[in-house]
Length: 494
Ligand SMILES: *Cc1c(COP(=O)(O)O)cnc(C)c1O
Image (cartoon, rainbow, N blue to C red; front, side):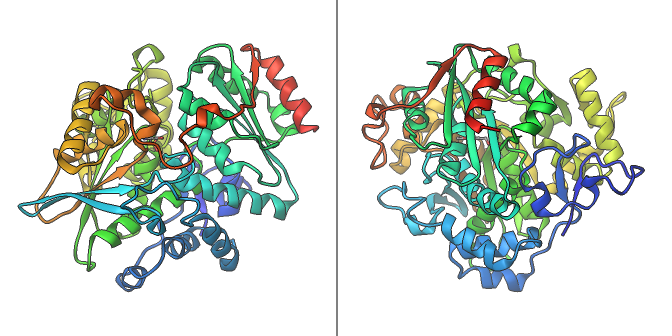
């Protein structure tokens, strides 16, 4: 199995590292050298006999089966050990009292009426109470394994406004060869999120509270990334959502959801996915391309509806910072969807020259138009339906109402992102095809809106009761690139 870049230039010399990359080669990196994203040269296929056999497997064993199709350069015994260490009931222990922690991603039927079925798949029972733990926990173990093999080190440097940073820190804490330097806007995160990150005392975790806003943090990360000499000397890397291993790890729970919601392979299911950077639902697309019988993949957005607009009209129009709304489902507040290019590559028939042209147009004109209308950039949007994609959007008022309705009708409290998913899923229910909504966070993380919707606090999983009272470890810093570089240099000793 080898990997290609969505922007690979076929006329480039064959020594181009992006042309014959294996899983381990792209594991620790982000973008391909040509600025594209990695995808397998072809999607491995899953047979009906395999699906039958996989019905009986534990989550960890299912993960091994899926991973080994993509990571063909890692010995299966090593992959198995990593997956079995990752997908345990101890790691995914924050299941609701009536859920099975051993299921890792337990399913619950919310509603079954007139042949229509609405199901919730819990992906947020990991250490940081959000779905990013599903992939990031595996990544932590994979990174430690790969770095030990190469006798190498990696210093992860990023900026966070909440979910990604804490998932990365909880995945990398205590891992040999890895340090995490995470910028966050000083006093701008919720008390719960701040406590989650800053209470980590591990010597390889460095929380930096920047006296500024999230954009200042991102600018500092960009400035450091542009200093190639510094980046190389200090072995700086990232773990953002374009990382291919994260996408593969996420494909596993689509298989799991399908197998748990069906009894035979002639049945289909649909998924609705609360979406931001298109990373989560991209994994659903990969699973579908592998032959998993998925009918619809429904993209749910909040007020930041870049993706809903594309899947309704064929127009991809990235938003400016000033046009990006700060909403009560903040992990979906994006101005452009960084993983979307992977789907576009398939949509335009895996033509890298087309992808290069379209994303060059994003830089110059702020987007592209595949609607086939006069003056558009192409007519491929007509094919998007063949890939099962649908979409919808949810606003703050709708999310609050959905949280109320779900509490009243089904007796559980869901978070704001999942509420966007349920709202949109209900618009796409079809007879005979179970609709699985991916639960991307637990309500305790977004208590302010729960309080607004229900007039009472969200319940916290055991162990999180007094998290704000734990001692915190962090460094406050002005938004000054030289200061952060000096801090990294002092702590890596490189
Ligand atoms: C990251 C995140 C999302 C968005 O996922 P993408 O992969 O960026 O589409 C949705 N909900 C929650 C809670 C998240 O943390």
